[in-house]
Amino acid sequence: MTGGDGIVQPVGAWELVSLVSERPDGSTFETFGPHPSGRLIYGESGQVIAMIVGERRNEAAGKPTPPEFLRQFTAYFGTYRVDGEKGEIVHNVATSLNGPQASGELRRQYRMENGRLFLSFSRMREGVEVVTRVEWKRISTR
Image 1 (cartoon, helix red, strand yellow):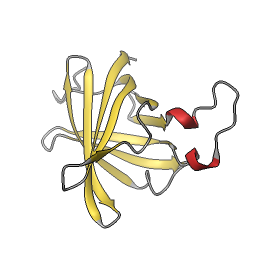
Image 2 (cartoon, rainbow, N blue to C red):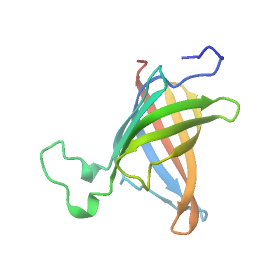
Image 3 (cartoon, helix red, strand yellow):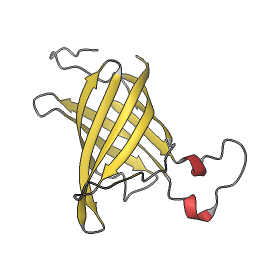
Image 4 (cartoon, rainbow, N blue to C red):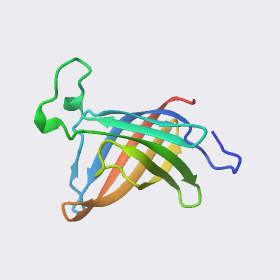
């Protein structure tokens, strides 16, 4: 979808494909484990809802989560704007389940290609800058 300003908009629902983080030495890790699930929803009116759940944190089968996996969950909602010149999507978090992972203004580099949305961002983790890359596939345009 293209907005009135000609900028490609991510409006719709997206399903998580992958989430991988990379340290400066090139080693990678998966914060939410190897098979997380997630949804990202961008509304036409500028609303955003995001949720990512680690495979071992998912309680859909009715089993409680072991304590060591409780942190493998993040969810927030708020508003967003697209800055096409910078290639950024900016999420302004209004409410968050996990403040250390999602609070304030979240700036994500983005590109859209063949029904996929690619987001990337960097942040400090354990004293080093880590780059996280997230891939989403479109499941709805509304």
